[in-house]
Length: 193
Image (cartoon, rainbow, N blue to C red; front, side, top):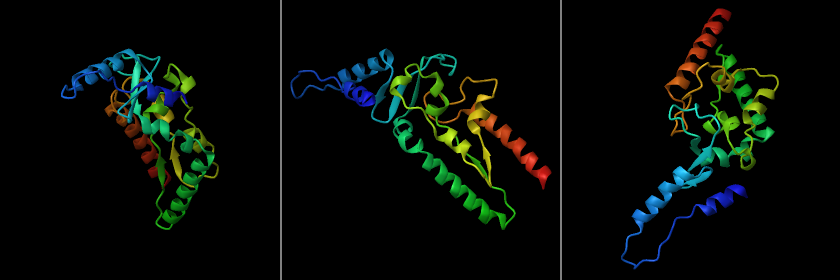
């Protein structure tokens, strides 16, 4: 309900003007000014601006992050234990087939930006806790290697710009952290063989 109210409150400003009068400049400036004044608002139904407490999360030193609305809308389904169990079962089935070729399956799920920075969100009362990664870590009897990319990234000394400020992808910093970790896993696997 809170997110629906936020969405409803973000309707565009309409002004009384003759039909030939173009309202676009007024709508642009109204929406632009909202971007700098408020947090927890949707833009164009696909991006959310969410207030965060850690101004050092991004080199822009802002007190908000941008993330995709889809990351929030999929939480209900992704938070179900059955979702994690279905993924786990599928990975085990794939590993069983790969065993015939002596191939080790490595699973790495990248946390989305919302999940990664959830603890930094200023007003958690309107946002659901992301549970997928926690549920995946609880699944027993893994026949495949599962990399906890969330904790790999969180264990890095540098926590600035792990994700792009204005995008939902890892920055080169995030990629480098994961890449270095994968090199370590690869070396360990070679030593086992």
